[in-house]
Image (cartoon, rainbow, N blue to C red; front, side, top):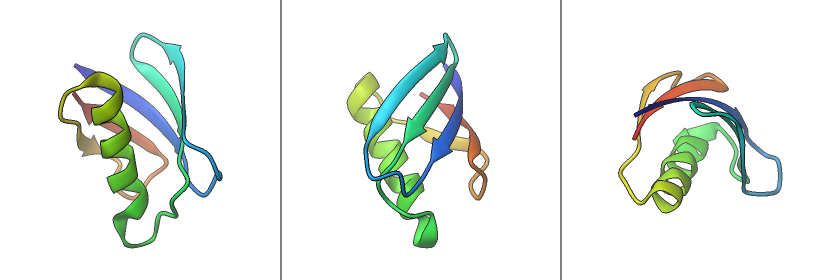
Length: 68
């Protein structure tokens, strides 16, 4: 399953908002420096879906495509 995700790093909270079946807005506490926000994103998605999450597109963008 592929998801389109809009990430908001440095938000001070961890929250997942579902916009549609394959579109989410995710708020992350970590900063985007040193890949910290991407690591937090994959851990949060693994916890939410109980499956491994891999970023397919958008490693340095706020808009990402993730495969679950």
